Image (cartoon, rainbow, N blue to C red):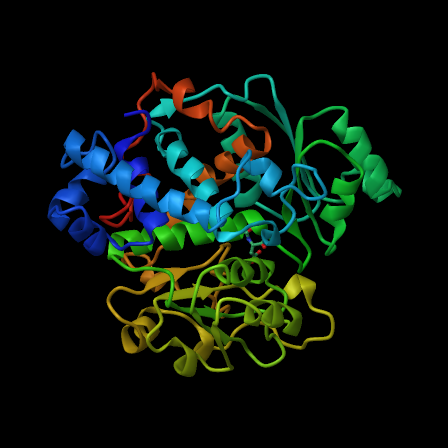
Length: 431
Ligand code: NCD
């Protein structure tokens, strides 16, 4: 098979929009057999699916594709052209995606998993240079973009902080962007002002990725969040259409949730419960945008108890105090904290708890509690790990090498760790 079995099956389920249970029934196999076919190759219980099953799945997927083509749902041409902004290959906002194009990106991310999990290496981006320009604090976004680019064989140049950049000498965005374009092949930019990354993008013809523009958007984070939800749901046998997503915390200044709700809105019939302390509610224009599509239900609450009941996903966020204008709040109060007791009290066994991180773990911060760390429902580290395959997919698509990745892979020569973290849940690393 040209692609890994796991990638092939996950893609088929996503395209057909079927849970594992129903997909297994549709192709006439036992759910347990399907589970073993979906494991990463090399894991102990992995089994190769019979060729006849592979042919049958290919046929169903192709039929579905033909039907969509006749209904003119499917667009053709390279993905980077379909998500382009004014013809330029950039990632500025999640608004560039449709459900089809986002799932196509995730197929590329699935293909990256053997590299992200350090079983394979690739050099498809050999010779390319990434300019990582971070004018605002960052740990995981900057490092994961850099690591993703390096794992595809490219090299990375970083700048961090505003004070140490020429912008502190009064240089304009236009000049910085134009000058950088002469040095690097793609730029990832994080900047404290909303709309600033779009300004950088206007001044260049090289691909630009928005790594977070003030309280505006954080598209790569929302993409990895959606990828995480779909991956976790696939394991749990759930579909995203019709799911209940509870989002808690600073929804006013949290750019990750602005991007996430807009991206989730591409699915159908979701129930959003938006739970924010008074004064930190989700901006109305973002709510209006979500309300326009996909017959979603949007409810707003100021207390956890009211919004968490029956949630499939809890997405917690940090108070973005650095962006406060005249808000008085210091942090969350104890009754706003997502912790083990709250999750036990209001949520089901199969809820997943997410957070873009960093969480404020200082005493009295009452951000997402560390007492959930050993709980397999806490998906935050699996979520953060997904930053690598998703960001690799973003680079591969923007630079037009996504079709070369599969054949560029070689085995690693060094020994990677089998478990990355000491508290990894049993499911870690599996689908
Ligand atoms: C977030 C950000 O910078 O927007 N973090 C991230 O990129 N993973 C969230 C935050 O700072 O609270």
